[in-house]
Length: 443
Image (cartoon, rainbow, N blue to C red; front, side, top):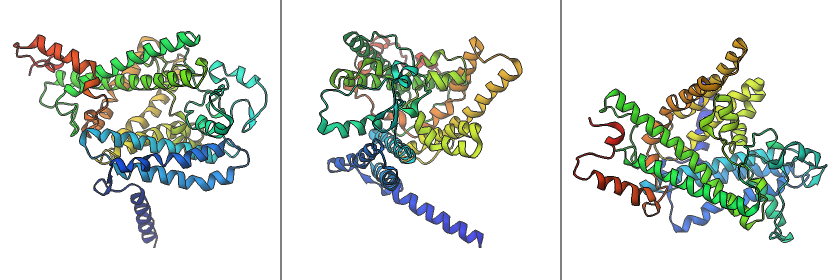
């Protein structure tokens, strides 16, 4: 009897899952006529964000939750970019679907609505003491004069939807805010941010172009970063270089995207420079896993990971459960998006993120029994081992499924591919040396 019930429940879950996430061959190729379909999921989410900033809307938000999640997941996992080099867009749009789902769950489960640090009810301020206690970065954003009263509802909705770290919001209290070395004078701030944007664009382009030079790895069809035909040292020197390049691309990609949004918000929406502190806090300088994940690395998806795993983990096992649940949620978030690449589900990605929880516990045990916190040179080497060495299977999983061949920067807009690589090839012309041999040597 119990076996039959289990089989029936499994079939129901499978059918519901496939109703929203079809098999790769059953998905709908995207064309120009589908653009409106891809934009539609934002409509119910914006309405839900509006409700989250209005009192006495808890029941309405709960009722709206299934629709918002179903529309986001059902849309972005159903429509597919069929050109191999655009497969990365399938990954990107499914990341967006997951973020939208997490936002909707957060909006629905906060009974009182989404409150700012100085509010007792949505839009009803208590006092300014809470703001001062949380620093300038948590200051209440100043609504631009460009936003008329007729669009105030839209501003409120977008403000809470686009807030990821939670600066100025109750759900973001306690989040680490990196120190901003830029001048907060508007023109100086914009110039420094523009300089940062250009620097990160060049860094991203350089490392992404390097990865595309590696046979198979840099193609839409994908390939392993561990080249079996290379000698041992060359093989892992290459895999380490690819992994570090991947991390550098992620860092630069986050920063240049954030720089672009910052410039737009300050220049066109009248936002205060103090409301846009750096998104990263020098991750390469981390000397413990705790400082890396809690401070140095970006905190943009902090609330998303908590919704996907940390919340349930805290219910089941308190703070310990929240730690494990948050990292498991992070792994599932990354892997479900990679599933959209059409190459199946790979347990390696969730395992890497889940592994971070016991590694963090190792730091606590070390501190408890030695009386010394993990830090200094050895702490930094520990972080590099956990991220650079243990993290290589993570990059390999992504590259085997073709992520490295995605069109991220068109060749015509790539300084590296337009000037640097041709110059190197020209200088090596006639020597019989391939560019890749510069990194791995001759076999």
